[in-house]
Image (cartoon, rainbow over all chains, first blue to last red; front, side, top):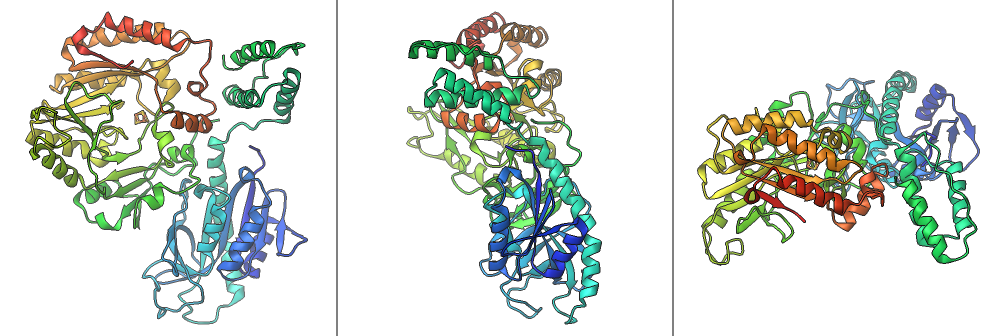
Length: 279
Length: 341
Ligand code: SF4
């Protein structure tokens, strides 16, 4: 339980990463993977494809306690299946399908937003309209399913966000101007970050009150003074957690560290103390 | 801590997940017609949404989604020994939906499901078919009484949900009311904390569809029955149901322990029975807060702020419960009172 809120980004391509880095003013970090950070946002550029994306997502997520992660975001370009989908349009993904396994994943869509939603199908290699298994609707990419699976190891589906910007209609016409794509990504980023902030705000509504260092010291002192058994230590931890959630602004009841002589005295004293905590 | 502000959340049922198999089922179409702004996603199985790991139950409660699915057999379950059967020899329950619009702290559903999203099984006709088969079956069926009597079959339809609270969206209670009209040998119980019965079918009500309201003092409702209507709304609904001729059961269940709760429940009984004569009711039931060990432990972890899961030695719940029951006996004639110990 901690209050720091970290938002993690994973992009596949360097130009996508550069857009995120510029927009969020991130500093380069040392490491095997291209990673960029400031106090709140963190970015890794994974490279193309499912394996790289899963590895990079896992590496970035594992740097944080899961409770300290507010969102894990995959943002990047994707191809559209239908000619009617505008190139440059930004989409929030509500369903991710892996073309190879036909498995589906569903992020929780809890935050209010005004973006358009669609599904993305992840392929192992670039596809055209003629490729077998290309769906009739939605977008196609090469990372989303791996990203979702890797992120799911760390956080719940309400914290996993996939946002895609349409780069082309399945490579038709082929050859994509990177300058145009950069502009497209830059236009989409404020909208996506706005959504991420909403998700982040939603997360605050069930965040438990964190046990502070004072609470920890309090429990430790009590454990030492009374030489509590393991079971009693666990009971104390639960009661303190309950007390802190119930009275977030109150200080814990004072205890007089009695010089406990026998186990019986200790148990009596502890029972009285528990009573006070659960009043 | 939980907060009541929730402007950042999408509206409840902003998304409807529909299993391919029932995409064009009449009940599916009826439900999606009633929610024209919802985003619709087709899925292979409701379990792909409902059973996912690491779901945040509390957050999902702020913006629950609807999942429409096809119930697979078994459609009908015999009641366990521990469940109330209203004196009927044969009692079964069905699960037309999983999950609830309300968010009571003491609800076993939080311990049972990973998800606060709502699953609605649209193929009610399959449940009706199985019930028909039971009704027509030989006396050797385990669901018939040991003597083979064709006493009415008791069916609880609101066991893992509050069907009346969902009626404006799903209309499933209406289907059950029609079933009751056509099957006088079935007696259906539908438990609710809702304050609405307008959406139920127009009178005359069938005499074999029992509306069972769970009531608690307002302070308990505010503290533990999040999102559920207050006492006055429920009593107004009870009044309306009785005047329309529905059989009504009042459930004081669970009666919760707490400092000063003896007085609060006493006041509750006075309020209820000064307005609703006990004689006009089908019956009155009462039961203490009870929950399986595993669910208790799980919910205690999920809701560390809730004092129900941190029983204080300062409150002697057994004595409080007995005293409350004794007070209830002053208001309800013996033959009308069913008590859980
Ligand atoms: S109304 Fe009933 S089903 Fe719904 S949350 Fe409360 S106890 Fe559970």
